[in-house]
Amino acid sequence: DLRDQLINLFEQQSHAQHQKLWNNARITITAGPTREAIDPVRYISNHSSGKMGYALAAAAARTGAQVTLISGPVSLEPPAGVTLIAVETAEQMLAATEETAMDVFIGCAAVSDYRPAEVASQKIKKEQQQGAPSLSLIKNPDVLKTIATSKQPPFCIGFAAETNNLREHALAKLDAKKLKLIVANDVSDKTIGFNSEQNAVTVYWQDGKKAFSAQNKTSLAEALNQLFAEHFFNENK
Amino acid sequence: DLRDQLINLFEQQSHAQHQKLWNNARITITAGPTREAIDPVRYISNHSSGKMGYALAAAAARTGAQVTLISGPVSLEPPAGVTLIAVETAEQMLAATEETAMDVFIGCAAVSDYRPAEVASQKIKKEQQQGAPSLSLIKNPDVLKTIATSKQPPFCIGFAAETNNLREHALAKLDAKKLKLIVANDVSDKTIGFNSEQNAVTVYWQDGKKAFSAQNKTSLAEALNQLFAEHFFNENK
Image (cartoon, rainbow over all chains, first blue to last red):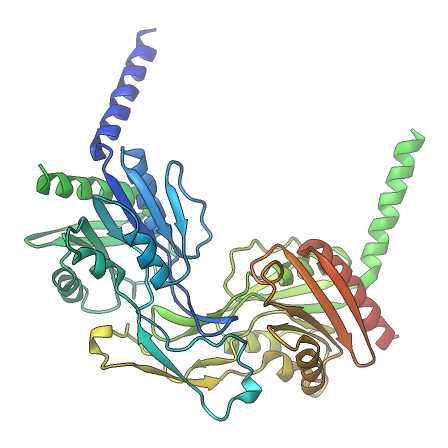
């Protein structure tokens, strides 16, 4: 009947609009933590469930993007229609990212800033240790900055998880890493971020910002996905 | 008919035998890794999916034990009929264990031997760091040894994940921690242990040992559960 026909028509149009949003743009998203080995059983890592990055990948894939998701170790199923590359360390994440052709890069992973200077090939026995041991660290490559400051950088979007001075730290990162957009969230608030289902963020760019109130990560990802596409096509029209 | 009656009878007997195995003994099992904070976003941890400890808890609960499962952060559902206590750090795991009354203690968790000497209350900004930073560590309490060397220790069973000299390290642990049994596995073999579904172990005690070939963790847990009960009741008859 007419009602069904109208619903069908509406769904088709809605689907077509969704498809059009990214118009087959190639988007690479990093997600989850990295793990940096101390020895074969111990490692350094960061709190990150990967939920935000996976939700963004799903939203982008649903709206006509070709999505590559480069993910550290998480307990999530890869979203439909997304190419998943699984990595462990920051160096592996950078290598995988550099090998991927992209128009947009979204650095959502919680990359370890440091890794142990030396990795023991065998488990370090505590009985062998004298007194208080110390772990020498070295800086990891900055995946997002490396991509954003490359010769022909894609449109780069970063995330800033901060516990204090959110706005100041986010704007400093936007500038230092030559990003187009940065999504800042206050991880000292236990009700949002990290392993939570909910998140509230503020997105900053060179001459503006937009706040998103606390909501589930799927709905937030859809809103961010819209904003990212607007800014990307505004710059590339 | 007769066939159904026989099947029913068999199932009832099987159920009753299962119930009898542990005869309501109180078993506490630790499982999973611990996480030791460096700052609000970074931590040190160990590879451990928690699968072995959770499978042991399920097997013991199915066979008439009262099971308390004290678990570090993992992505597993708690088994039916088990009391779950969720913890993050080694110190929390010890405190929870010491508060639990038990006849048998199975230390299956991959407890961090060390934790950072100081925990920063705010995220450490890498821009603030000069050169190669170093992380001072201090020893964590040894949960298993603390319980096994307490005044009236329960029947204590440990796990040894080793990358080399398996037998030697396992027997040294059995002795140093005053354990009744130790389950040793070679984690340098990538096909078993850690995040794998399969595991192969050798159980050592003061004057004997028993090897279990590679099999899935559920079936291995059932076999270990039998062996543990035999040794426990042999000592407590």
